[in-house]
Image 1 (tube, rainbow, N blue to C red):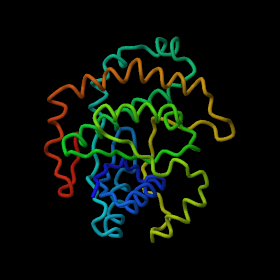
Image 2: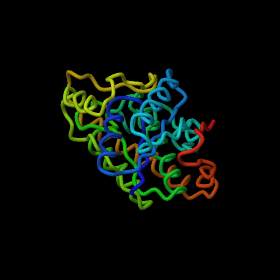
Image 3: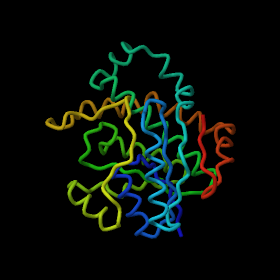
Image 4: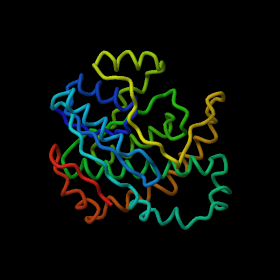
Length: 243
């Protein structure tokens, strides 16, 4: 059976992603990342307990893992002023910039965990219809190429799902209620639903990732300390929270 590490938000997209992975025969380890700017984290663990009970060992919750410390390794970005960022990447908002850092930190953590435990698949609940700049196809492809550098494949089980009603029906078929258990994040916000996604914004987000974030991730992942940081995570056993 193939192991997969799922980035679990507690929302319905990540729940359906988990269900679809289970149906495809994956052994799912799911984990929540705390960026230090969210409330309601305890709800995620409540939902995770329901999932574990319902799926009877086919999905295992690893707990909440902090990504706050990774921002300290993004010195190259943190030393830039907002005016520096605006001058070069002016189509992206500060909120979208923060989303990029947050999601990238999740991926760095996930890659480290996967490498430590010989997992060759990472999954997330991105959907093509979402209005977050970091969930648009060009940025998802950047993350796909990132994980492939470490012999890991990125899975996006609900990418092509466009209808929220279909999502609810499928989740119901699995015997779950339709309550999202995700917390509230104060870092980033989606684009206005009444407007199409601005390609210039997405292009600037991709350029920021390539220019600023990716070199930091590569530096961290080449550090023996960073990889060794995950050795205490026992898959399927005690839940872990890293400060």
